[in-house]
Image 1 (cartoon, one colour):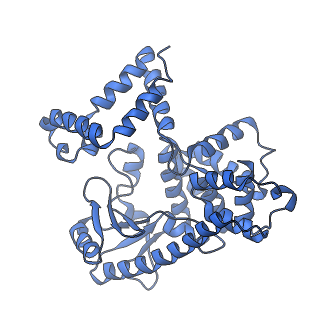
Image 2 (cartoon, rainbow, N blue to C red):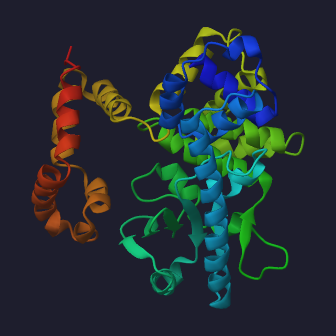
Image 3 (cartoon, rainbow, N blue to C red):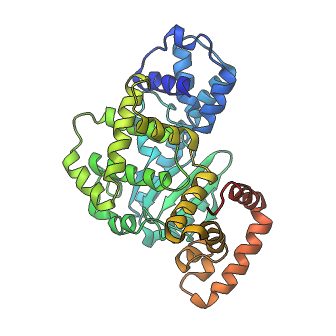
Length: 371
């Protein structure tokens, strides 16, 4: 993983990798690691600057460039239609961060995230369908999912956090308009200030970090953002917001690690706590792992009920609380009497649609005892 970190540092800092550091690279292994973290394009740029041309990396890099350009064109068309119909909107996450990377396509994207006026959800659905998108998920959480082959994927958010997320996050972002600023020359487009975007990207990262985990790309995003906004961020304001959200300590450790790791790609000077934090990022991958998520849930249960941790985990999976059930089974939301039907539905859905996931859970559970 040292090579991966070093090459990512070179990519975002515009540094040509040293010949001695890359003369004996295992490119197949490096490719697997980069794919796990969705950073193949960035590594491809670094390798190319050093004169190393690998077919797999070059194809991934070229695909990322094409995809970003395609996304930009399509997003512009859709948001123009939002504006014509008087629907306010605000691009989120990777849609903003990608422009801060040194080169087009360096920051890979799986989807486009956009916050929009939730009172116009039906109108937005009509816009997406009329533009050839299939409505994969609508009205079941804080974001709707629309896809159009071969690669277009939009997550359109009615809220920044949903019912299943941390209550502090939900409350803080319940009325996001109070934090939003209007785009110049655009009546319906909005954006966060640099400070508030950093607060939000940190909260969003922590949501994943505290669950199944999040990979090295999140740490790289932090470094790129800090580098792009160098000297302009108001950390007295940022820290107050993060204290309200309960994640000020996480942000401080994440920020310090990002700056140390990617300033020059040298991790030899990290202390043990920093090494452990970096290992967690490196072992989590882009979207976290099931084992990370289960381990944290079991540990949380163990802190509450001691030896019953594993049995309580199983019970909670079969019979979740009403809040979790409402987020998982749409027809139960607001109808407590339908809870038993929700239990049966989840059981059959899990058996027939998510059998592999359940087998993985059972396999992971065997690693934990109730001592």
